[in-house]
Image (cartoon, rainbow, N blue to C red; front, side, top):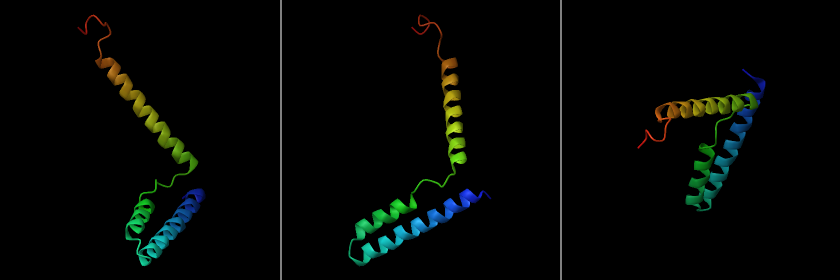
Length: 84
């Protein structure tokens, strides 16, 4: 496994743990709704990605978008007169 990713995962785990502790404190103070919001936030953080992984995800997204655009262009008539 990539040591950078390992470090990111450990940092992420510590961060989520801290947010959950904050939510517990809010619960104890009677701030139930805010505690729920904090838990939701912590559990819906984006995935942990190294710079290379993030670039790969962006590249795949770009290629998919390009292919979709090309497919749509092939479906559309070339001559605007034919579209009528």
